[in-house]
Image (cartoon, rainbow, N blue to C red; front, top):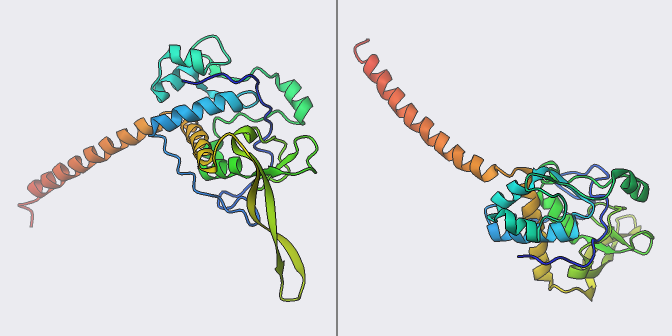
Length: 251
């Protein structure tokens, strides 16, 4: 299903500062992710991208490989061949090989586990974050910045897919005549291996996968919830009929 890429790309901090769920920052509203955990094809693509581009630094320690296989509709053998880059057993947690002490020394703080990122920040945050990297020479370590999380230590690990984009600003004139530069849009200056539409889908797939990882049983929970509500509805009807029968002679 997936191919192994020749190198594990750097990744660092996705969570280094508080952020609002309703807005990512000044002038950068969150985009709707359209993540759908019931879309198994999207889950499989997202898992492939995550394992190849993110797992080098970001673990999913609350998810085990056998749970991954069940959720993605794959066998343990398919997961072992295509997605299990760490661990020896299907029952192992999805961890990274990088020692936490080394990561803290390289990045200043160990890259966070992303098992619950979708539950803590929301899928729109992840989707917009993945699409909001831009070239920034002032970021000497990575050469890239992000409009959702300014100053992020995480490099643009998906640049080969998306390409390189620059932030374009416009000048706004206030009532008092003062001027300021305001972010307007991104402009692609170096195409990647994907078209913009294809990269949007790739970002959506990764977001979908992380949404599933935050609660692998969410589809079962939703289905069970429907049956519970149906049971309660039937119980209510019988309870009401019993009530009417019990009190029909009481005036």
